[in-house]
Length: 262
Ligand SMILES: Nc1ncnc2c1ncn2[C@@H]1O[C@H](COP(=O)(O)OP(=O)(O)OP(=O)(O)O)[C@@H](O)[C@H]1O
Ligand SMILES: [Mg+2]
Image 1 (cartoon, rainbow, N blue to C red):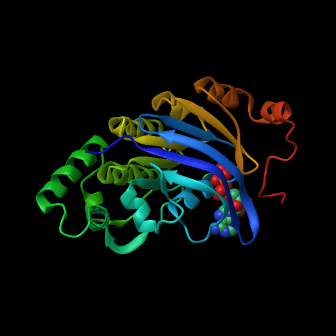
Image 2: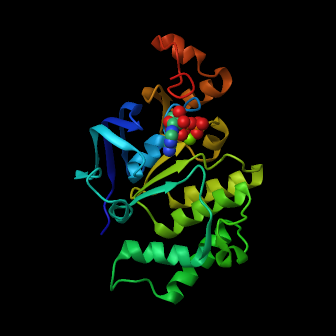
């Protein structure tokens, strides 16, 4: 019964402590599409991800975000998750006292709603299957969420969450950072196994390398709090080879950071 999702971001403006970080982001992500965002440090990529998920620290001051025409900005954080938005975080938090498996089961049940909880058998079956695909040792199910996980293990665990939660729009913020070559392939395999017309993917990355494994349909350059240029996979290759100076020159951008120099 699920339909192809459409996330529409129009002229989104977001401030932190009265400092404007996002300065008019425009983007549309549809089911079956993979979008990649690349851009210098501190330009607002993670801020976009957090604002889309409804992180209270990020104040939306303008623009709109809709998912299948529904106003996302009006939704509470849990409603956004239920509507199918998912974020694999750049810096996943550690939660002591809650096992990975308990966390996943409550997240799935929160999404499914009361009276429609997943059976324990089905949950375990799915968890085993996804963990096997991600080549994760079963002990990770019983460890506290992210506690003491290595950088790469945390990233793999974010993808496990995505695979278990089956989102409609997945935002993956630097899932490749800190991964060794083999882990990168495994994480890409996990993401690729999810690709379907029912899922739209937004990948934030610094390196073209990941995009060798997860093929993007669109590549966007993020600078000064907005998307300044869009293209196909060849854009990522040029950025990797030449950096961002040519984009700045082409667009007449002098200062690429909103952060360090603001
Ligand atoms: N919670 C916060 N509190 C204070 N400042 C913040 C917060 N989140 C983001 N910022 C600031 O907003 C700016 C954009 O940060 P953001 O994390 O979105 O950048 P980014 O593009 O993801 O960078 P990177 O490539 O390094 O991950 C930075 O100057 C950052 O310091
Ligand atoms: Mg970031």
